[in-house]
Amino acid sequence: MRAFVAVVEYGGFSAAARRLHISQPALSGKIQALEKHPVVPVVPDLVEQFDKLLVGCRVS
Image 1 (cartoon, helix red, strand yellow):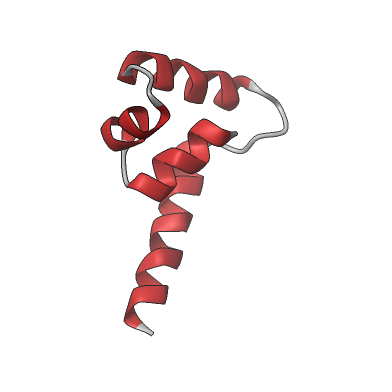
Image 2: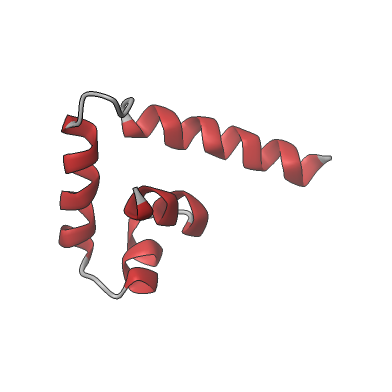
């Protein structure tokens, strides 16, 4: 889950991978593993929801 939070927090895979000190393919693999887990919703949908939330916070 830390990988997912980093992608959202840092705005993309490249920045998150740098921040986590791992390669981008390794980070992608972690995200893919999350997507396959039955209790975790589809990650792109969550990223979109977080993006909208962040935009709303910046506008306020």
